[in-house]
Length: 385
Image 1 (tube, rainbow, N blue to C red):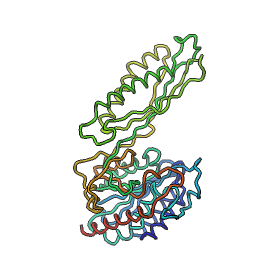
Image 2: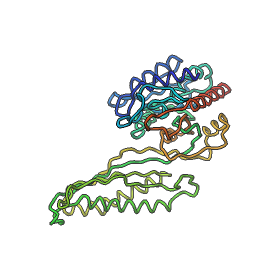
Image 3: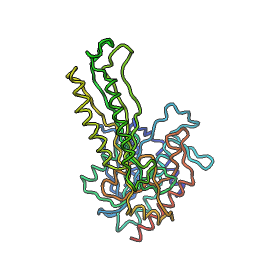
Image 4: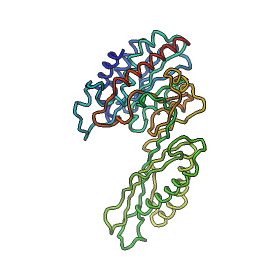
């Protein structure tokens, strides 16, 4: 089984599915392999027709079952000094090198390699395969897939998201909400500040207010929070605006993010910022320039995976692996989107997140073998249902 998985992974690495490019060829490859096993495959293209999600099912078309999920896109290799071709898998010293080996085509390859075995045993519950696009740019594909599944009234019970966790069971991570807030003021000469609207100054006031919310959030951490730190965080990543010292800046932009531990914190921040802009900043700006604007673009809103007291997926994987607990991670995944459908979800996959996105990304053969062992144990458990 390991050799078959390695060959499939080699095929997957050869698809250069960088997020800015199409993933259709890889999706077609995965769909064909699953259909050869008897799976019912559905391809959901995005509005451009250049990208797609794949959702395929082995076994009875009934509620329940388990989803094996992974994203097909990879991060760019530009400006990285690889020692080998990143889109040609190379094996050496017990490692498989190539872009996406770890994040996260290794898990996808293992799931596809196991599909014929699942097909022989699924009778009472379905096994689903969910492969998405644009995870690396905001979990866009998974968001669209979840909506499509809701519309189709497809209701899986459990999900395993195969991100690289060194095969540890992960039951929670914070969300990641990213925004760009833009300020449109009125240009003028620096000697007459009252005749213009300085977008940079209003951006600075916005940032100051946002940092006040950041401080407030440190007092709002749930008592049961196991995250580190336990509260919702806010980060201002960039401020852009202005040109020279003696010109009133007409435009400015603030790029910022928050990583919520609970949905109520997200609402708190959004509502406070909206009220501050509408009641204080905009009236002051429009007193001088009626066309002044403040607008916020949602770059990405990735739901967190909320740890739950009862999690059937966690219980199942602990039984299959012999693990005595589950962990939290600081990075985001698509897991929260599947949890929003009512599924019990864990993140568990081969490889270390330390290798993801880096030059000479690799996946160890030991990790791939551990993943296959988990899936083989899962297959045996399914046949007992």
